Length: 202
Image (cartoon, rainbow, N blue to C red; front, top):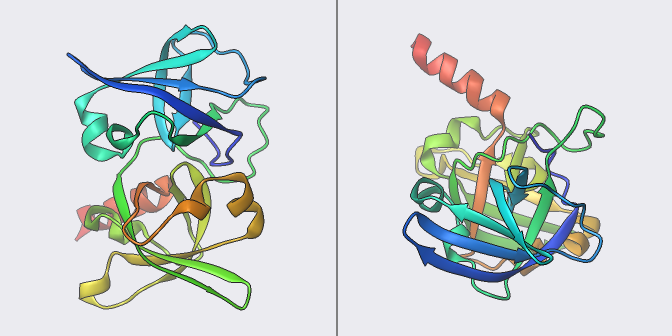
């Protein structure tokens, strides 16, 4: 489990095709907490299991199921990514409960910067549209954010806005988003649970 508060940025050293999917090698910054093989680390919001280190680098094996639901396969050498180690019982929960189980890829549709507000409109996978709730939580590329607006209408059911504060823009890669950018999305677990229960009760 994670909190959606990005602890640091890492750099992709390699993302190679292997028989089991892809092998992702990431160089963390100096001082990144030592993690043992088997540890869970959120990489751009995706919970991955640390296989082994290569010197100071972190290595992960990424299976086809994960590749199909995330942008991990798109990361090239040199890409900057978000890193968060798993939470413990003593971790300050400053974001929200994040599982690191990506629901799918959202797409940036519009970016508006006006009157000091940095607002981004994204299209969520239709499968989780019901879990997009105004003033609720969402995780994008591993960052815990608040949904500012959910757009109405059947044709726009999966469109929602987030507003990014300067601190978030400075500490993450979200300032690099452009129209068309593909983003790992995890809907809030509690919202998904309620939506699933309502759907079964219909």
